[in-house]
Image (cartoon, rainbow, N blue to C red; front, top):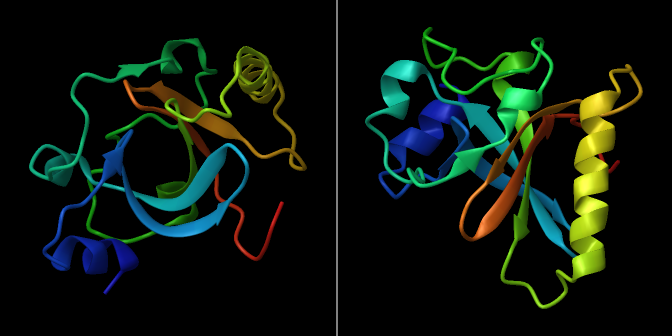
Length: 144
């Protein structure tokens, strides 16, 4: 049984961001928490609760080789492309000053621009009423 199936079978609410089920917390910093996310097959993403229908996506300006939500239609198995690191930044934080927001926009701009084996790939950005979500390449095995 894959970890996605285990998450879906727990019976509780499942949080879905950009077509990824949020799983365990990988770490946290001053402004963000990073979760492991597993892509939900298209057939399940419309029936699972926890998504935010009012969210807006900024993925239109991403390169064509980026992942988009809902492209998987196969069984509940995990491949490297099905796993991502989801960086969640809370908009309500007092630490989220104008300068921090400028730095966040700069980080997004830089990650969108560069594609290199030694730089974590930014797949997608989603802004909701309460969070910014950066969908990043998952790099298992430790801190970055």
